[in-house]
Length: 165
Image (cartoon, rainbow, N blue to C red):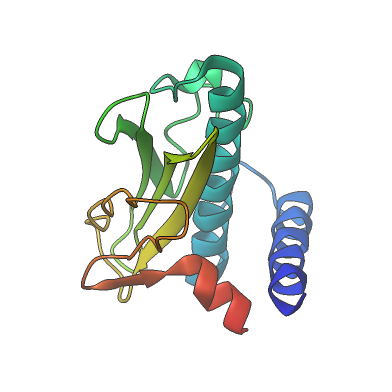
């Protein structure tokens, strides 16, 4: 429950920020606000990827197939990229690379995992522990539905960070 409250709070903050800022002038936003925007965008893209997977039994590398991104891979603060991990039937990675040196980078992944008679999707968002122009490497796919996706060295789970706050 505590984690869901934190996620809701972050989402509400992003909505409030988006509603209170002029989209053509984002230079005055704090680094934390810009990072929250990227983290929320990666999370929304992963959600869209899960929906796309349910409908097509594959993930997509085309932004035009996603409701959240809709061809907007280049924003004032970040550049987003989609890459199959290792292929479109088993996983997808989303990176958010900052355009400025004082921001963290993010990599989100979602994997389709065989769970007996059904397939589950499991996701994670990793953020660099320090500001970086290099997104974390995409974590490896879990072997089963109970495996934990582990962020690589130099990064941490962005989801766990939000849940701890």
